[in-house]
Length: 323
Image (tube, rainbow, N blue to C red; front, top):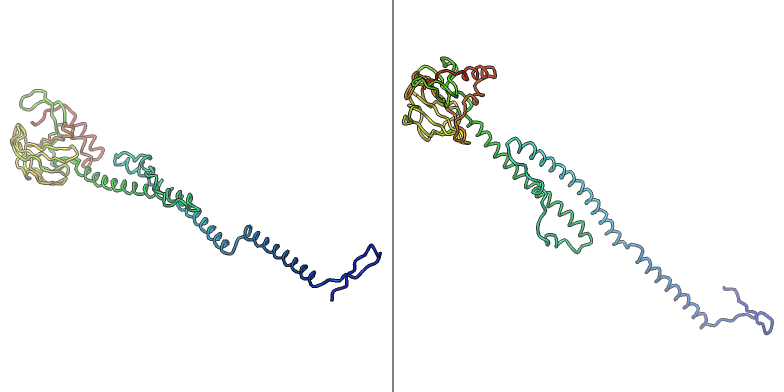
């Protein structure tokens, strides 16, 4: 039971017992309730304003997870970027150099995507900037990889063409070395065997017994196989492509036909002395882009360095040709 309360009366100079009625009690209780309600409301408002709700906490955790995954994604993209850059560097400075192709400019490899509305659908979100920048970077990496893939396709084609070029270059002598009777008459100014005048000899003469096999010195197509050219007698002309042609003259017999595709080392005729000739031999010429060049520069598949040096010295001597 509550203690009695007293109040001092200044008039009577005495303490009087305070009497409370139900009205005062009711008002007092209501005031307490009102104060508590206001306090509770303020507390709730402040809590909602400054403290995250369970739902917000869940969303915050999801955002933190997304940011963590984004950071990991950026690191992976950094690794991919380095690998692509390494591929591009090797492509420009090794592969394309080997096959004598121009490098792909960085402006082409790193060019952006056109269109101002390309990333418009990603705008308007809380993390729009993050999504747009990541998508842009991924698009650029994708384009660089596409360009690199196309470049590798070109390199493969160039490699195939390079092999075809290597096979087509006239890289052997037209007859087997063991059938040579003496040093060949070389390319340059020589004494003509019939006219005894100094004339330019546009090929090399390989003296061999009549009937010695003559071989194609590189892959090609038979362009001529007849005896209608003045002085060459029975002769064959091969078109090797890439600007190369070879001529084989004074054959005793032609062993191929016009239009036939031949491989390096394939039989095309036999040594003879038809046409303007003084002894059995094969007159051999190499033509590059319409200009007759010294055939001795193309025997690297047949001769060792020592043999090549001897051949070079012997063929360069000013002797008489056979035709």
